Amino acid sequence: MLILFTYLSPKNYDGLVVRSATKVTSDVINAGSNLKIIGRAGTGVDNVDVDAATKRGIIVMNTPSGNTISAAELTCAFLMSLSRHIPQAVMSMKDGKWDRKKFMGAELYGKVLGIVGLGRIGKEVATRMQSFGMKTIGYDPITPPEVSASWGVEQMSLEELWPQCDYITVHTPLMPSTTGLLNDASFAKCKKGVKVVNCARGGIIDEAALLRALESGQCGGAGLDVFVEEPPKDRALVNHPNVISCPHLGASTKEAQARCGRDIALQIVDMAAGKALVGAVNAQVLVSAFSPDSHQWIRLGESMGRVLKACTASKQPYSQVHVTSLGESLKKSSGFLSSAAVVGLLTEGPQKGPNLVNALPLAAETGITVQTDHKDSNEREVCVLEVSVNGSSYTAVGSVQAGVPVLLELNGSVFRQPVPLTGHLLFFKASNSTELLLSVTGVLTAAGVLLQSFSASTASSGEQWYCMGISSLLGDIGAMKSLAKEAAQLTV
Image (cartoon, rainbow, N blue to C red; front, top):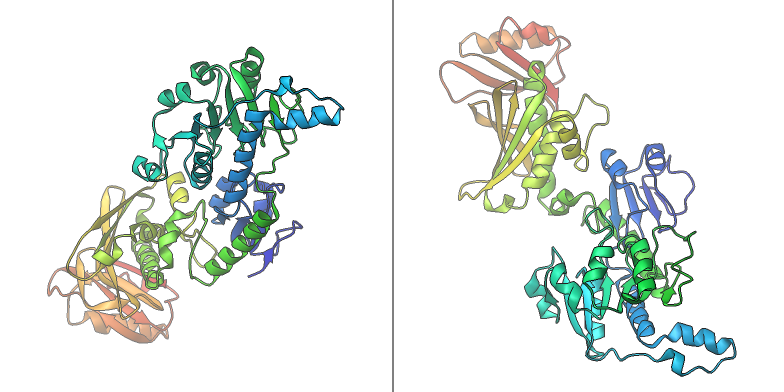
């Protein structure tokens, strides 16, 4: 696997590693015909077009903990600087002044710090500021209250949090739900003179609303490491006397830079070696796919999808796909099983098709509803794939036996011998008769194709599905029309 660490052209590379200054746009992604992974050496991925990467089936990963300590320490430095006007006092001294009264500050001890976003950085800020005697409260829609309580942060709603805070710091990703989180309405609910810090992403605090709050005195000061536009062309906030600002230095320490670079390299190596997937922001379905036994189950899901695709070729398009896993060991596997099944269903011929990263988004685009279920079972582990086509339902049941994906059942026909899903396979549906096998082998012989294996249904009468392992695909599947009601062939 070739990895591009310096931004040139991604055309001939399998991987691309960037920091925050490099913009990985859809044009860059589409130019990388071989790209399989984009690594962001840092936390945020807003400089990467994740949607475009997902559509191409490219994994986007970051280093979620690489700059945690550095960002938390900078946040604490902002809080201390705001409380004691340290930067302003330094500049005053450099101007030759000795103005002690002008820079009267306040202790952090006993003050209330509101932390919006209680992930890794929020947690580290809390534990550090608690050592100054601050009371820490917070809000996070994901972190359970009992978890944050274990490190001294009482969770509450934003409506409850705003009025209590002397200081507010934000540590959320930038997304529609967090854009403008601190705005005119929320500032109005805060204590007069509240001080705010943003070392996360520009835009979480509405910059125009912040300027108005500073001018009115509703906000007593702001520490800003990030801006909506970087560098900011509008200097109103930067030049405000009660604003301390830095040029996005949250991860700008020797330790963080080294840690992020090392982490992203190791994460890519581990992923390429099939050991683990860490930091993937658009491929959570793959996280559980790195267990020792998962690869064969992924092969099973994809192969079952390809079998049903071949057997329903004349009845497409699909409207619904339903994947059910049975067995304790498959409890966490339904996600990648459904993605693998969709890969098989949507792959067209030998050319490059969808993968586990983009299978579900592509299914949604084409109007396919994908459902997943898991049922506990004391019997052997199996996967059930059901597809709906034009109001009709088609089902395949499979498992992994001795490390080999096998088909156990097809549309109600239970095979006497499990069908190994490998090589060239010929499926056909016909009524059981003594002449059937001779007739089909005659067609194979005439085409110069060897019969390698044969699996029949357990049923003794009626139309049933049969499967033959063959040396090569038939040149003309139409030769089976006179012998079978339905026939399909594929290479797995």
